Image 1 (cartoon, one colour):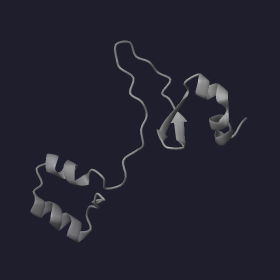
Image 2 (cartoon, one colour; image 1 turned 180 degrees about the vertical axis):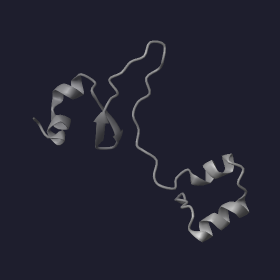
Image 3 (cartoon, helix red, strand yellow; image 1 turned 90 degrees about the horizontal axis):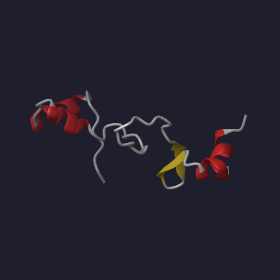
Length: 82
């Protein structure tokens, strides 16, 4: 059985459209399932820890003061955008 890096380097899966680049130099396997009438969404990188925490808390009606208190207490982690 070939190692994952051997499969990624093999031209056959690439030509068959099995692999998708999700980040420069990083590939993953495409979802093989196709549902009639549903547009297939290409794979993408997972969110980073804390990347969407603030937005989620706002959707749950937390205000800036409440979010700040949660951060201060270490209850949540917010990844600040660069």
